Image 1 (cartoon, rainbow, N blue to C red):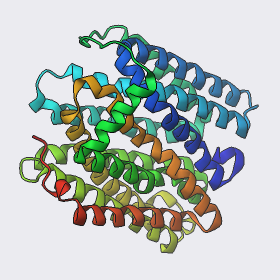
Image 2: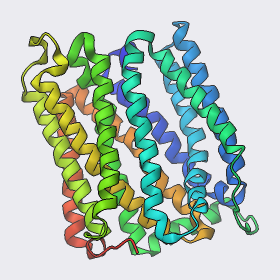
Image 3: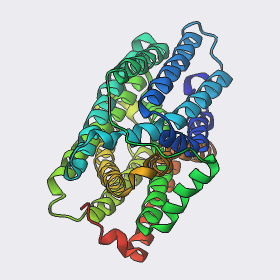
Image 4: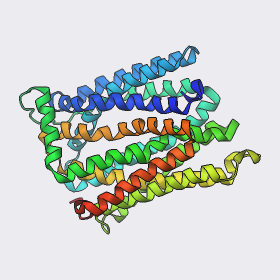
Length: 382
C-alpha cells in the first residue's frame, strides 16, 4: 500500500479494513466456534485466506494491483479471519491435558509464532528488495494452504455441544459473562487498549524504514525481526520470573516498559541524527538505537500478552470458550484499527509524533487501571 500510494493514511487504512472486518465478524465467529467442529472450521478458513492471498499476489505480479484491490482483499481476509480466530483460540486448550502447563503451552505457542515473525520478516525484507512484494503474498498463500493440510491430521475431543439456540442469544450470553466477571471486564478492554494505542505503531514501521533510502526494505526486515526476537525473549522471561512476580505485575511491567520504549523510539526517530549521511545507513546511530528500542518493546509487550492470554484461558468455562475467546481475539484486530488513527495523525503531523502520542495514551490508561483496579495488582495465574 505504501509503495502504491506513498500515503501514511492509506498505509494505516490497509490494516484498519482488515481489523474492522474482523471485529465485526469475530463475535459471531465465537458463536460458530461453539456450534460446529472447530477443526473443520479452521480448515475452511485457512483455504479461503490462501485463495485471497494468491489473488493479491497474482494482481501484484501482473502489475495491475490498485489501492482498491488491496482494500477489498484485506477486508475479505478480515471477514474470514473473524470466523476462524475464535475457533483457533478455543481449540488450543483442548490440546493441553494439565491446567498447570497452560502458561508453558501459551509461551511455547508464542515462541513458535514470534519465531516465524523473526524468520519471515527478516527474510521478507530481503524478498521485497530482490523479488518484489508478490513473493511475500505467494509465500503467505502457501503457508495457509499448508495449514489446511496440517489440520487434516489433527484430531481432538471437542466434547458435547449443546443444542443450537438463537445466535444473538448465545452471543449475548458470552457478553454477559465478560461483563459479570470483574477480571474479564478489566483485562479484555485493557488488552484492546494496549493493542489499539500501544502496538499499532507496527503499522507505521514502513514509514520509518523509508528513511533508509535504498536499504529501506532491509531496514524494515531488521526492525520487524528485532521486535520478534524481543518477543521471544519476553516469552522466556515470563517463564523465568513468573515464580517471583504475580502475573498481574508481569502485565503491568510489560505494558508500561514496552510503552516507554516506543515513546523513546518516536522521539529518537524525530530528533536523532539523519542516517542518510552514512555510507551504510543500517549501521548508523539512528538505526542501531531504533532497532534496540524495537527489541525492548517486543520483549515487554510479549510479557503482557502471554500473561493476559494465560489468565483468560485458565478461567473461561468450556461451554463459553468460543464466545468469550471470540470477544478476546478481537484484541489483535485493534492493531490495524489503531494503525488507521496513527496513520491519519502521521499524515497531518509526522509518524514520530503519531507513535509517541498513541503510546502515551496506553501508558496513562495503565496507570489509571493500576490505581483503580486492585484485582490486577493481586492477580496470580493459579
